Length: 502
Image (cartoon, rainbow, N blue to C red; front, top):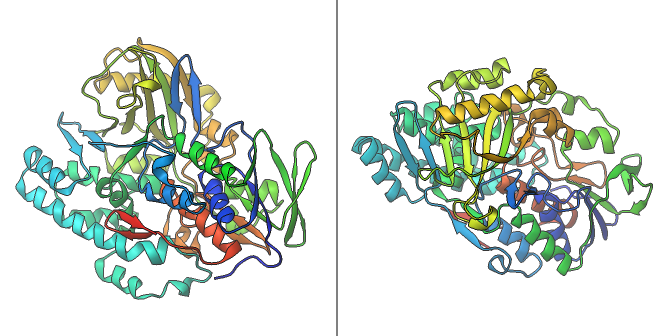
């Protein structure tokens, strides 16, 4: 494994997102002097928080899978996860709704999920589900250590016995086809393959290895911290500060000073110079190359990006008792939805969407008798050329109309507070192509073909734009992999069927 060259005592981390904080904790635990510079007044990056009129909203991810990875980062400085976060397991993980009016609750316990499938669909589908869980579990064990939780420098670094194991399992076939080897009902197929969208690809083009995303939530389980997802970066930043990491908020980095391919300092917008032996960059990788390093390489320009999302945060006087914490509403179209979003770069004509009832299990996130909702509609990314300054209000109204059609009666009339984020807003916040899910996980943008996390002599990247990729678990892993580029091998999290041990 390549590491930075030269001294590495003083590390400056640009950005206090989950990847940057993970790197900072691992580096501090390895004895480095770490300074984190963050342009916002709070930590978290995409895992931010918005407070308005007594409502508290997460602004980014709403699900936590593999919380042991947060624990791993905290353990690097001798801290324990339960001392910093109160995690509430969700059950069901999702409540999924279908165009025929049926509903399926997704549980992480395979026995309970099989019972749900048998009750709603039938025993043959339940038996197929249990076989698919066995496949996902084996897939995860084969994939995690060699292909997710590991720095690689050359494609042939992946030539391990687990690669052959994945080939034999069918991990490099298409995800949709692999799911259909076990499941036949459109409801179970959708509920266990829609997660490919998180990787920026459709189940029809995604490799079966991306079934690991379904494993992480639909088998390993989902939790939410009391106080919301933003409590994760708050905890990580608090532990970092306790153990000597300097965190400076409201500090925007303008450029990385360098001599040739060696970084020597970071320069803020105010002109302040902070010397560095190593710079770890948690800014969106393509934007960091362009704005901080002044580079525009073909390897970055050629990237294809994931779809984006319109997110409507709503404080409401309306309560919908049938909702779970996370609710997935599928439109009648399935293949067509992905074709519109990814291939044609058009808004969905028959939307599938997610509604998160943020205070369902945590009443303190809204005033008494009120409710906080996080509504996400996938959209094309900013390369589609949609003029969101013109379409913004129209699409917001379309979102409300669809919600009311899908059973949220009077949703529009109940709104007391609202905030809409469009692809144009994501782009303005520093996300390339307005894509909060970063570069799509196509074959040539996966594993060793994804932008690397080491540039020049001493610039290291972390976050969803580099390896291993998108999602809270992957970003947390990316922070440890970034730290390893500085200090060498660190203790591992050992993954085994949804559990992890140091």
